[in-house]
Image 1 (tube, rainbow, N blue to C red):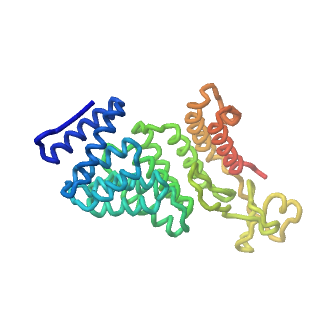
Image 2 (image 1 turned 90 degrees about the vertical axis):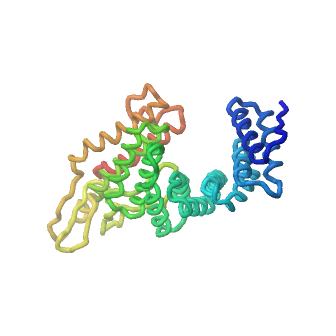
Length: 341
């Protein structure tokens, strides 16, 4: 295919080349796409190259997975106000995909500051904030800022926005232990599913874990570890440990109101007793319906991988490694929360 644009301005040539590049991309015409890329590259490298030509050249390079060339073009395009927002947004995607999370956050921040209406940059900001490993205080600030940005995202992205808001609130709960955070996470994961989010399996699994966190938030005296899929955070320990053996208390807890902050596990209470009357705190049966909902939500998600599974125990035996691992992780947390001794 030989394309030419005689007697046209460079802008018109660039627009024509980009239009044909899009057609070639949609029809998987690699030869035509490469020819248009070469034409756009030649136009973009002219001394008087316009911002649209430079930006379009970056997009075509992006389509062809020529990420270094695309980044060079988008970086040049940020010098022009006409295409600055789009160029910064594309740079944030490239840097996120390339593992440069700090660079991705910087590009998103610059994009939103330059054009507050360019709200979809918040999607990239939140993904980078969730992945970036920094100290807890920095993480809290990053997640709070991402939530603020996500709240300005326009309706077409709402399914993905709700999912990312749920993840950010789960992250805040992991760091702050504030029960309102996990309740907000549940709310947004539900909204995400109502909006037919494209990855409903992952959303259901996250919802199941968030629901369990709500249960834990209500009856948290024997909760040990917070764990989030694909989102490593420092381990957070139970609110109560035994003042005799120093182990985390799982199940029944015995509290002495006269001694103040004094708690015993069942084993030490039976072995050693205590000089004062002890108040017993058992696992509260009122939370059982919520735990059943947690299990059902996760099961429905994992049945995408194991359609014949009737329970999470069935899923834990699946030949699909991801399905089995998620089921085992959820069952481990559930057992940790509900066991009596």
